[in-house]
Length: 370
Image (cartoon, rainbow, N blue to C red):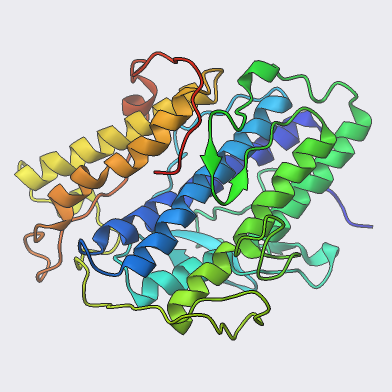
């Protein structure tokens, strides 16, 4: 019999906190690749990455809904929530590095590895030993020390099974305030509808939707909503052609994609504030970007803390970061052989958690994907 790593509500909340961090961790790599693309070029690639980023916000919000439903408190400003890049994710028997890269074959390969379907040979092999020298691992077990998951899909399978176990033992598991739920009136993505979580069935549907839209683990190329899973969207960039209905996983037969790998700002991979000349204008701009990103995380935390109308502003703000990106990526980074500057996403916890309420929540409005 498989041994569960989720025994009670506290364990479940720790897993959902980890899922929240995992869903966010894909955003800085996707945004870095997206904004590195030179204006008016690579429109196909830019669209694919942009849609994936919006849908990761959908996944983030779905996890927050599940966490709120069981009485947890989503906090995107807590220390360590934003990983230090490069970070590691599981890839079957090996680990690969997730870096902040410009749009490139290497970046797309990383995106495919993040989203790759990975079904463990058996439930007993869902957990693997985590290499001691490869921290942080973003899909490690928060309750079984030194263990990581075979894939993101198996991570969500563990949460789903744990949710069912705890719900069977605790009739009052779904004790969260319904007012803290984000519904479709506050967030809309063309890739899926927001699920309000009030019970085991809706929680299960939310978690299964996240796994299916990312990996297509059980539903194949298309998810239950008829949308391409993220893995296959990114594979289109590698194969140079769109998928269409009826295609096999490795052989898209739709229209060709136009890609120009040279039409990008060649930013330094996983740049750090320490790479910027002390006291320079670029260093100041990099710190300002990090502060703005911390404010975005604070706004999301407020949205998940009973003010869901703020979510529309947060999604729009994610794409208003273009100005901050451009102030960095358009400029060479001194001392780095012509490589350009880039945001570092080194967020000071105090900078995020001490942000004042940026906006007052108004009447609910239907958010349109920016």
